[in-house]
Image (cartoon, rainbow, N blue to C red; front, side):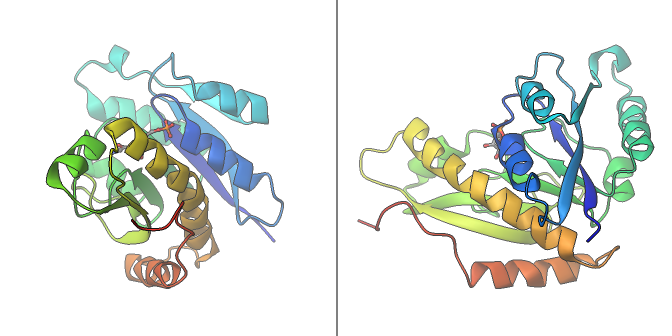
Length: 219
Ligand code: GAR
């Protein structure tokens, strides 16, 4: 089986990257993590790539100043040179331009720490607590031009428990992120090349019918 060459873009810690690297270590996994790109030179996640023997590159946005197109042009060149087919944003904290989004349309995933469309943007766990929701979670979606938007591939929900803080709730969500992202990438990678967004969304529906186990019963 040929595995889909996949790049992971990070800005920081890289725990989701570590989960994807772990899944792709299995030969039967349909995607191979072939390249990691960080826009932050100090991104701790680069160590995960090095430990796994995967090529890691820093493409710092700062030298490009306000020229977002030039920064993304350098990333697209690096991705192309490595023969990358699929891209996973894993804590990549920069907006992408329409050009970059179009280049990887239907081939780029993002993970977000909420049950989208609820709580796009930052500070999702504190906002979920403030809103009083009883279920929170994470979403993997195809990347479109709008922030934290695009066809949903898969979601995992966790209960909000009495006494939760943003930290305890965030940790519960993160554990699910580490299960969900490898599942979602496998769904995309198993699709036909050039899989249309609607097809991926249908696959996401199937995933929802087989939800991941929740850590503990609802109160
Ligand atoms: C993750 O919780 C991810 O969902 C979030 O950043 C964190 C990165 O952690 N992404 C976003 O908020 C994107 N809107 P990690 O570097 O340990 O994977």
